[in-house]
Length: 486
Image (cartoon, rainbow, N blue to C red; front, side):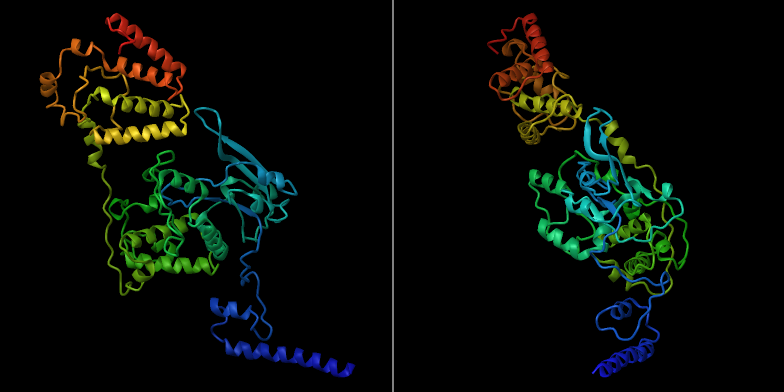
């Protein structure tokens, strides 16, 4: 019995030995392709397959975890490019078993108050035990476990203390290394966006699109909020429109896809072909990409999307020799000087529109960090903006309350004069003398309305509001106006 079992074991060993040679002949010429490599490492493989590390590497499982990294918005995100998902709450540092995480909370340079962003974030990867607790307990999904395990270096003080710059990787990178987990998280949220964008979208009444393959690698939601950096100011330079691209010297194909896709002198199909080749190299892990490489691929994808196509379809059109074209240099845009030459006319709002002026001042004082807006204040500003739009007033160029003093009759029409040149004539003919309206100027009316709203508990008066009301009362007394009967 024991002899028979020994013979069976030796037979299996001999079978594997010969299978190794037969499999080599079977896969001759295609041994190291992506499909063959995956099959040879699977359950259906036969024989002995040796990976010649480090020239060859086995693809790690999706749930493989190594040193953590910080997730930031994609650098071409239209809402807040490159913004941190981390709020520096410190939970990861508290739950870390070896205590290898150190965080410094950021501060607002104007007010000195703390803000939900890390100013510094350090991880000592020699101490990190890759347990994944920080990623598990992070309430904002801002920490993920990386797949990069080749971190050996001779100097640990320089290379093994990871700072925020080295730890930060855009959301697109996480989508690339863990597609299945990303899909499950996105389906649970119902969209690709971060939780902060979800909250702002809910306030603005914007419905976020469901997660699909088309919108997987690029957020497309633009919210009607101006709290963060505007898309035009924060967008990556590589995503500029073709007409606004910087000048580039015409050069031919270099054979390096990451160089060719960034060459704006090449026709778009050839740049798309290079982008497809570069993405395949990244997916197959035969090339370690740099941040600019992913930006270049995203830029070509954006150009293809503007033409309602994909880089794969454009790459199929890249045949023959490309005809190089010089990219014109960008001149300073002339339209920027037009608004300065023709400023918007100052329009006097009628007495019925005092709420517009008060809401405008409230918004201005909030931007100057003088007051903190509540939910009711924001609704009040939104209603005032809608009323200003209906009255034909330019909200952005609206003067602050009191900067323009005019006498307006109570029965004056809500719509302003169509132009600054035509405004004096109708107002002079239709407006009664100041005595008819008691000589009340706009600042006194605004201060009276402010006091009334304060008494009715509609708003909470600040110290500046009370000073303004006192000054208006004094001005009314000097003008012989009864303040209580206004």
